[in-house]
Amino acid sequence: MLNLFISPGACAMASHIALEEAGAEHQTTVIDLRQGQQKTPEYLAVNPAGATPALQTDQGVITQNAAILAWVAQTWPEKKLAPVVDVFQFARFNSFNGFLASSLHPALGRLLFSRPPLEGEAKDQATDLALAKLQLVEDHLLEGPWVFGSAYTLSDGYLSVFTRWARQAGLLDSDRFPKLSAHLDAVQARPAVVRMLAAEGLSPV
Image 1 (tube, one colour):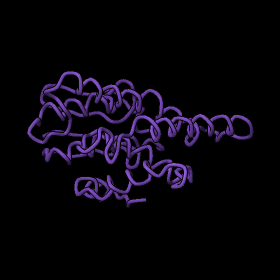
Image 2 (spheres, helix red, strand yellow; image 1 turned 180 degrees about the vertical axis):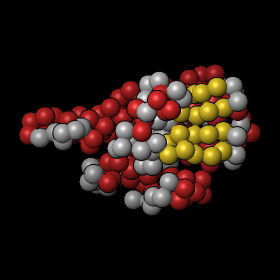
Image 3 (spheres, helix red, strand yellow; image 1 turned 90 degrees about the vertical axis):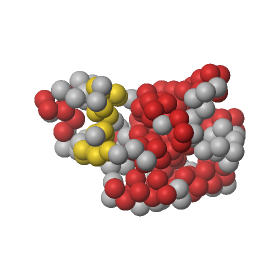
Image 4 (tube, helix red, strand yellow; image 1 turned 135 degrees about the horizontal axis):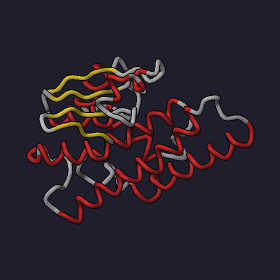
């Protein structure tokens, strides 16, 4: 059985959503990042990078949300969770997920999770950067109602991780980000996401 290593509320929610959307039989193992469980020898044997998510499969371990999402979409093509047949559109899917991983996630992560917390000018600069990244998605990358228009893909679940964080932090102003706000509400209403949240002991925000 597939085993997904997660930390509830962290970015591994994207991979957890993907498995739920695919209807894949799986289990989850919680890694408490605050307690440092990602640094234990047992977990480092699974993922030497000491981060979640990590997905144990019969063939080995896959890490990084973007890679796991692509694997899930290609493993269950009948679920139509990404345009896996169209080479160009699948590249766009991977490009968007790469942006989330390499640009939006670091910007929000630095602002919200730096230890010690950012203060003063450093916090102001980090806030401006995070808001600018969200604005880029709002204005240019989110076609609406889903990321790529009328069809839901796993990119939508991935994006919702970060808009969820933004809303919790008071950054997702519905007047400034109407498309992102509506998108988060739509994603959180999906049955697969409802199941994911319940499994992680979370509620919609």
